[in-house]
Length: 109
Image (cartoon, rainbow, N blue to C red):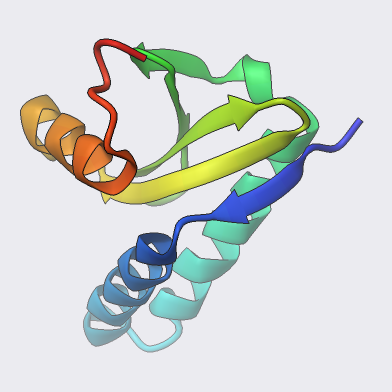
């Protein structure tokens, strides 16, 4: 069963920023980043519980080829993608971003 995907508005900005950064490094790489993001989202929608819970109710799916992670929550038959962040980011920074975007502290669910 595939779960519906919902994206918070900030996810578009995350994706654009990441794509631009990679595109500046090598033409076409930004497009590859976006393609990997959407492919991983589709995989996650088929098996949402396969990704580890890393902070409260937030799950993290790692991108292939790129050091970024997709953070999402399962809400019934829907997955809410909260952000896509660089994996080297400090955990406290990621937690603060998740809280800012959802109004919920990651450690409390």
